[in-house]
Image 1 (cartoon, rainbow, N blue to C red):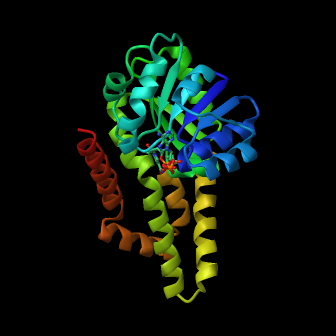
Image 2 (image 1 turned 45 degrees about the horizontal axis):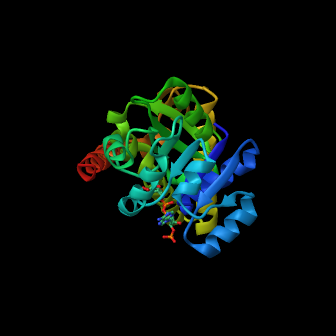
Length: 265
Ligand SMILES: NC(=O)c1ccc[n+]([C@@H]2O[C@H](COP(=O)([O-])OP(=O)(O)OC[C@H]3O[C@@H](n4cnc5c(N)ncnc54)[C@H](OP(=O)(O)O)[C@@H]3O)[C@@H](O)[C@H]2O)c1
């Protein structure tokens, strides 16, 4: 899958396109009604600006749908018409909460449809991306996972798991930003400047993630390493346990997943 066209090149589509452009392996094009943005993106990425969905379908093997879900009903008829009678085209939807069955209904039988859930850090090339595998031929699934691996960590899941994905990695950046906020505020309360506290919080998170990534131990093993008997950390952990820290995180993921399911009905 080398020729990719984006329909909608805003925050998510634009960042994905730029990530693919940086990889230097793809022929890229996009449809974007905001002219100033289209000019800027074409200059930055070398991708071709196209006039409409028809041109996108003619140009590409895979069309990435990166418009807002509420814009989809306006885009769908022209895209469906352009796809009519085509063979071997893939449509990759980034739209949160729009099920494959809805995409099929709107876009017809011709394309292979792949639903994907990215998250905000994709915009800095460090996304967590889930690709729904249902009814996607193995070669297309492999190609789509490879595309998103250019801008983060991509993996295949079943479509019924997409609400769980939305609750975990889709919404997750907000939990992490709040976690940083809480740690930094605690540092300030304990006497550090805001700048020092924020930097220490971020470096602590980055370093801890690196240890887990290198397989230096499970989360439990590594927690035990920081907790010396009657030391500072175990006193802090006791506070988190009493406040139900892990339970609150679990509830947050499940609440967001349930809300995603509700919105998708
Ligand atoms: N942002 C996230 O964290 C996130 C996470 C997961 C999934 N998503 C999904 O990613 C998709 C894109 O989100 P986003 O945050 O990138 O939104 P966005 O920044 O608003 O981008 C959407 C782009 O589509 C353009 N557009 C509007 N109508 C169009 C049309 N008829 N043809 C072609 N392009 C059109 C918009 O142009 P104008 O500005 O001129 O209207 C805009 O540039 C959404 O479906 C969202 O659910 C986003």
